[in-house]
Amino acid sequence: GEDVEQSLFLSVREGDSSVINCTYTDSSSTYLYWYKQEPGAGLQLLTYIFSNMDMKQDQRLTVLLNKKDKHLSLRIADTQTGDSAIYFCAESMDTGRRALTFGSGTRLQVQP
Amino acid sequence: GAVVSQHPSRVICKSGTSVKIECRSLDFQATTMFWYRQFPKQSLMLMATSNEGSKATYEQGVEKDKFLINHASLTLSTLTVTSAHPEDSSFYICSARPDRVGNTIYFGEGSWLTVV
Image 1 (cartoon, each protein chain N blue to C red):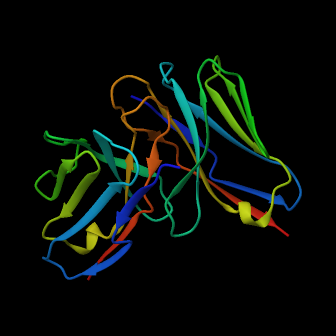
Image 2: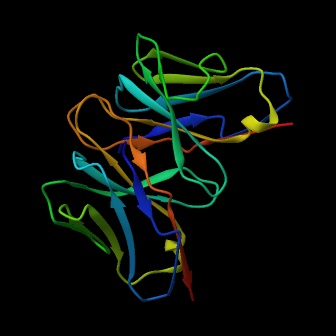
């Protein structure tokens, strides 16, 4: 079955870059997503990448995909205290109406 | 942009009672919606896939008689927790993928259920 893994915790200083890593096992994954969850809140879609792409950049966010190694990363430039949250990577196939498979989430702590 | 709304955001109920949570797609139609459960400090676990006009598909280990799902229209799915017990206390989140062409899946704000 599918499996998505993330490191549990990352601490950075304000202004530094944050890199959150994710690995997945399903080679048929077509779309890979990054979601942000603040305490007590729902999920906010940050970005997603199609499996035929290597990189996607959106303002402070850069997503890198190494399909060979099944490795996905999210880089947040100039990390701010408001970026403190849990970040989930998720994967899905494009066929039918498949639900997302989530990683365990990485708690990002930004220190002032 | 597309929005998925959940209601209520927080609910406290007594053991043995039933609670209904609504998930609405506000500006798009969704034949399929998904219900997830999240325990504190854990990831989201898929409970079931809600299909408009047909029965929901439940994941292994999820009791279909306890977690009733109804997808009455293309914009509304409901999850009813029947005969709730304290161990059902959790954060429930729905998501929906628009029927139109697109790759984005939108999530509701989530519903905190506390059973006392």
